[in-house]
Length: 363
Image (cartoon, rainbow, N blue to C red; front, side):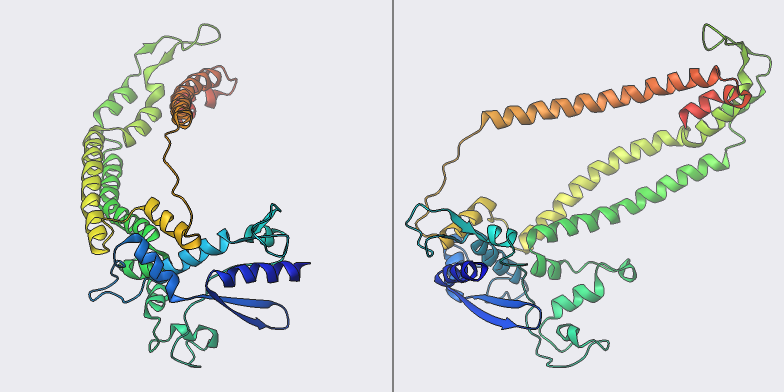
């Protein structure tokens, strides 16, 4: 049965303009699916503009990631009926998802282009000959050697290679991630300096000194029952720990963070606009591309009319309100838990817990 289903599906795929190659080893049976250039020409015609450039001189064909996305879209959309693949009957349609689920196909994945190096070895591994310096897959080699590795921590990301291999969306994400990491460096240095300032003046802070030396100041009990009067200097350790992270320089650090957030957002907008202009994405629209892919699969498909969903908008607003309420409730809950924990530790029979109730509750 699986063999019949496989043949019916591959026949439908062949009708869409794909070439199918077959290869078998001792364990698995492989089917290589290759799209003809007409499919990609239709893609560019439907979008009504030439393919976005990928270098100084541009490329004559569309990128590998776009080709994979087009082929993947058609493969997952292709369906056949149980009645010998005839689409005109009312029988159940079977898609690639169903065939993957019942085990007719085990996996689907794109292949790398063959390198012109032949059987040259790279680092003693014949299977990695597509990484050879003399091959045509230089972009993939740069990703393999100069990206996503600890030794490349201080190297610039190969964003153009990421774009050619994964597409614009993922490339923009990693561009933002790299930019965000770089912008965090001055903030991290400032935070370390703030903590060092607190450590340097840990013992010499005037407020902490006054609290630690206030042995004659008697404070009221913390609770109505079973709580005794206590001296202000008993909170000396708590005052010192608080001073370590909450001192006068912290105010300037908070102002710096507010200014940094605004600067980061504005500078990233400029960097993103530069990437969008360089990659010629100014007129790119996701819905338009989705329509183009649908027309490639079925030229007779009718565009879907846009209908605003008030129900969906209402649900999103309700969920946002619930989320905000939960966050506010968690914040209040933390404060209440600290107060309750301080009272419980104060009433404890342990002298250590009773003397350091506030510090332990804050921790």
